[in-house]
Amino acid sequence: MPLNDFAYQRCLNHQCGYTCGPEEARTACPKCGDLLDVLYDWNRSKPPSSLKYFEEMWSRRNEPLRFSGIYRFHELLPFAKPETVVTVGEGQTLLQQSDFVGTYVGMKPGRLYLQYEGMNPSGSFKDNGMSAAFTHAHAIGAKRAACASTGNTSASLAMYCAATRLMKAVIFIGSGKISYGKLSQALDYGALTVQIAGDFDDAMARVQEISRDLGIYLVNSVNPFRLEGQKSIMFRVLEALRWEVPDWIVVPGGNLGNSSAFGKAFMELKELGLIDRVPRLAVINASGADTLFELFEHRGLRWNGGRANMSIVDHYYQELDQLGRKASTIASAIEINRPVNLRKCLRALEFCDGVVRQVTDQEMLDAKAKVGAGGFGCEPASAASVAGARLLRDQGIIGSDERVVCILTGHQLKDPTATVAYHTTDQEQFNKVLGSRGVKRASFANRAVAVPNDLGEIIKAIQLYS
Image 1 (tube, rainbow, N blue to C red):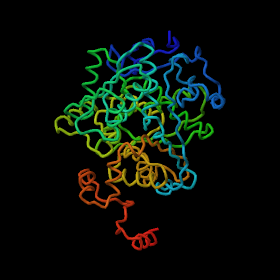
Image 2: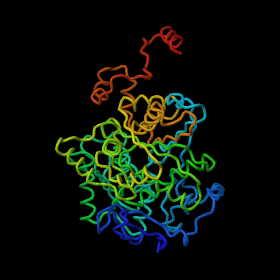
Image 3: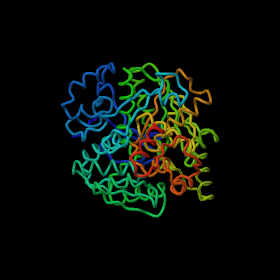
Image 4: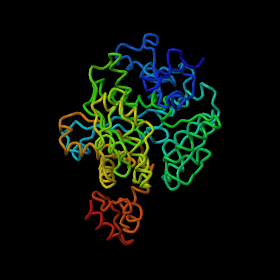
């Protein structure tokens, strides 16, 4: 059997008590409909007694398992047997200390770090979770895999299907809700792409129905194995910090898979005695897709030890329907009104003493320009973490001497249209792409300098602007 029998799945609702083996392909509890967790009998799996154990894995990078930035930490997500893991070398990502961006945020030198997940093979953090979900799908014999996507999930799924030839990809996108940089990946990798009239939430509802009716493996982050792979982002952060826990992890909030996975990672590391404290967690919504912020900060929704009052959520969703309000933000990767991992994120926020904030498209694009000027281009959604850290610093919640890690979730070429529009000299293009989103100015634009085709004029321009 390609899956380990000390791994199992359990309903997030402990009152329900439903459990099943790792071989089941479920995205919800069949008894109560809640989310599922992948859990382990740690006494049988025998994880290492110290995180320093993983330093040895660097000397084994000739092995595909240990070359992967996910399965280098296989002992902390051991649902599949080593010989059955599917990897394309994902997770070769970088934690970069950046004083340039830190100054913008308001941090003292040496205190702000950027975890750059845009270095993954498909250009975003999604490869972390996709590798784990793909491994599980292959282990149970799946031949087709599907997702709803604002772009990054589809690019990642299509890449794994194309690179391994193990499955066919079926991708659902909403109308006009995906950047060309991401759509081009799914098309180039050969995925069947289905565009429906609606937004991501509509596409998510349809893909769940299609997956159930046609028996297609669903790889969206409602899949608990996706989050197992996304835990590894935190393992790499700790590794880069020589196993010291930072004070803050700041992450964009869309479908809330990352925040949920990060919370689970720290819960397990603490349970295993591999860390002695946990960082605080900050989840940053776009103001045009701020469900978590509204529920958590304004309506008092809390995990409450697993007894979250979900009627608050139901009432809010009814309001969204009555008002016909759809998510709307330039940060397409987090343009989601109904995050499927809401309950898991609430659990993570409680465990990590977390906070939730929202930032405008203006704030994200300005932060994105600063990240780019510091040498790490990112897509708009990624910059929510930096904009959020700056806001929390202004509010005095993050101290200037605390150690802060901002997660940059995707590469800048994921959405070049937004980047070019921000820096353009063409006001019409700026208004078309960004003005409609409420962006009034490009505070840190690096505009091209127009000069005649004349050597003297070119020299003058260089001397004037350099």
